[in-house]
Image (tube, rainbow, N blue to C red):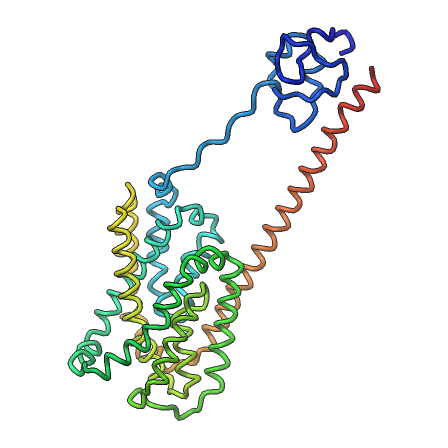
Length: 365
């Protein structure tokens, strides 16, 4: 390398015709190395054809929102839709499963455009809500016949807290709390609330006919807390109803009655937003798969499992499952963090050896 003439070296400004410094550690603006380069500053004019001296490739432009829909395969959309039914039926947070299943299986669900991801999740809730409405049609028709000012006030008390909190903090919740470890924390917190409420509730609980305005407002607060990913609307309302002293079967009925208006309102709002901005190409198919799959799986879960049989069961098995899932997610997140730290250490060590290389070249000269 000592035979190279200074006049034929690359200049610091990247101009091959300019006179470069005779120091072998000249900063190179043509090279893709971060600071120093010896491959193009100490080599003759053939260095211009050296692969390291080519300008670094530009990162590909960020995909537009209408292209991101292709990242969610239809088979993955169908799998998430089929999981929606049991997860919606049990107090285990269906939204948490929609995020954590791809996370644990390595699907690129988190890379979807945020609004499209929300729309897909709403399609799941819409299909599940329609199935629940069919399953509970007798109760809903009875409530509609008995509708009056008092009934309307009860529905408003239950729906107002989640509507206000969702409107005010929707962006913060989706940005800051939808990360897998925070969802795991929500699962654990919801499990603790359910276990404590079910354990402390009296054996001979209150009847749903004894529902008062304070109980309805408390159910609304529970639904507002359920906006935190992982908490679960079903789990929160069951915990609130049991904490208010209602029997298990009555708490189960109140949980469903409180959830359906909120599910319907949220679905209508999301659908209106989607129609206003227009569905990206390819998204309509995914949304139809999500809604249809969630409808079928929820209706099948209701018919096969039996809502009346599950209503009398204690909440502890669901709490144990939630804690187990949270532990699995936490372990996966810690393993990923350790792997990322090891990669950074290895990259730093490689960079240190690269920066030390020009010094050794000077000593050799």
